[in-house]
Length: 216
Image (cartoon, rainbow, N blue to C red; front, side, top):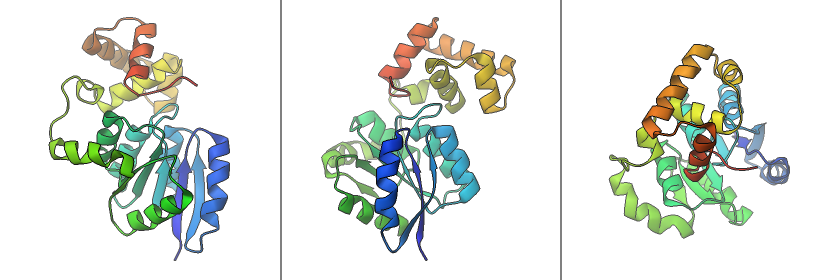
């Protein structure tokens, strides 16, 4: 039986390049794609793949938050982060979210296909370039850095912050998340209070600095 894979990345050329390479493998099949985090969560829910290959920096919902939601819905799905980012925060928060591998985008395809098979078999994998980060910090997974956005804000607040930073209006966010505008405004006020940042420009800078979103 083939390993069923979903690719989630906001760059069409990357997805178009990776999909045929995976489909050429006798034991792999790409069953779906997504170009943002919310879409990734929905596609995984609809298609129930075995493995998700996902970037960290994606619109509407970043890859770490998306991985956490995917794992909460179906712990059997194995998530591989394939990213340009080797920062300590991204790596540690990704494993906290339940990903099974964190691989940098500069790895050869031969390494990626090996990782897909390994993760499907239940193993953990990471790029050699970030091994030292994980060895140093995985023993401290139980305690978040008090200054981390992941400890200051709830998952919903982080999601609202990301979407505000990406220029979404209260009405648009409410529609995307199937919540009332009043609820979104409440989250927005909570975010501003907790961060002590009271302008959209300030929230946007903070979201970019902490990796919740990125400039296109």
